[in-house]
Length: 335
Image (cartoon, rainbow, N blue to C red):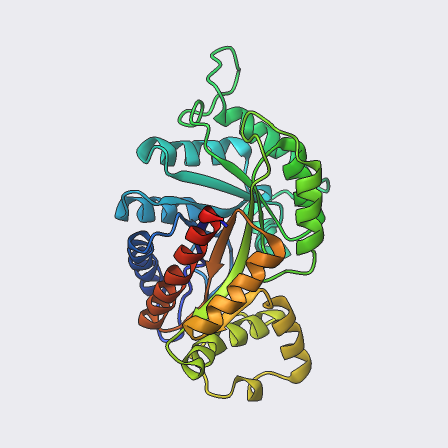
């Protein structure tokens, strides 16, 4: 593992507002930069009462403006919701304002339910055009060509790093075929992680964008000074995910002392399986659990995330994780 990064879903806490969530995101980004996180990514979700990053490019601009050196980007933009030209123009604008700092991760899912997807796109196409759309987008971000009938201005010539995001084998195959970096959403859908990374690495074709495979693995982290405190703060994410899976999405819940009493056993079993690529506990526990993830999957980067209701506790978790991850990165570089 060479680098460590942060994925922020800009959670809206119970008792708080969207304005609180966005202010917390900007504040968290400043802390992340100070703590040495390499990237700060935000994700596109729609019609989600507990997530404030729907207008992802706008939030990325706010974070980039509030920081100085850290890379900022999308993890990711759900490309089926947008035309490649519009994405190229939005991120080309960001890359022009903040040169050398913008990343563009692309997802194939809508990031919403079907009713919301229809509201976003108006006319639903039956065919999957994701591979063609990615290629079209790469063309808009490549070298300037005045002979092209349609150009992304801003966008052309920016060569923004484009990542393929995924939680299945499809994204791994596409990223390998196009020679792009690959990020796996193991923080909430780890089932295909091992097989997807194998497919990507075995089938990678060098490109003008990347000469060798580059893998990012996502993990949930909730770190605190005691095991009890970490488990307490982790309960918010368990509750949130359980409510989402049972059709009751909402704001990020307040933490509870005995989360098992709040979630039916059959639901909890599925939640824990989905969130199994994670580390929760004291610094020693989190170090051991993150080391197991890195040893098992050998990512080039580890991107962590954590839905913690209390902003101060979330910053503390980020600090503990940074201490651990910076040590792991140094040890990897020295090996």
